[in-house]
Image (cartoon, rainbow, N blue to C red; front, side, top):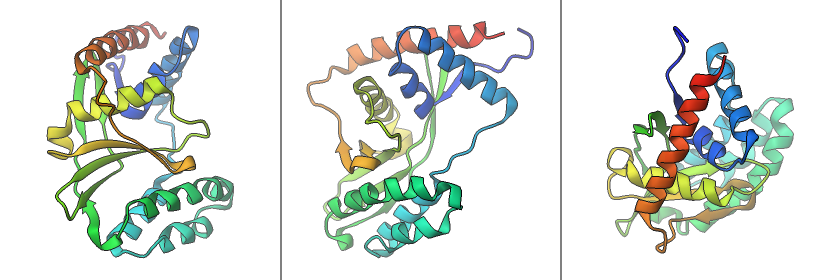
Length: 210
């Protein structure tokens, strides 16, 4: 199709895709492409991400997260009431506020199976002991699917040199305050082959959308 946008997905979109099965994959890709063509879409979680970063940077113990509930538009208040407790639990799990701070991350654009994928963490952390983490936040009502977790952690690791050198990728299930890190038993080469096939199928479906 002349003038069609090239196959592209954010990390969130691609990992949501791999967590689906059967015809739901094609329906999902079709919806993404039409959304991109129309320029629609809105992220309601931006205020929470900013509040979490502020609490880490200024060591305010969750004051910014708590205040965010009243700062967002009324239509988003139930969402923030649902996700803030888990965000506060995650903040508390970081330990001594004086021993952790924000680290600058960068987005990376990778190509896999003919599909361009934007790898974009929500924030970076650096600890006093030298450790660093690149963090993706999961906001959905349901926990992240196992496939989505493996894909997210692998793709972040794959591009960590650009994202935050020498950092460990982390996925935080915000609603439940749970932290997911790479499983040492995972075989990267097998995951790479699997995701290459998934990305190629995504790109083919993208091109097939009328």
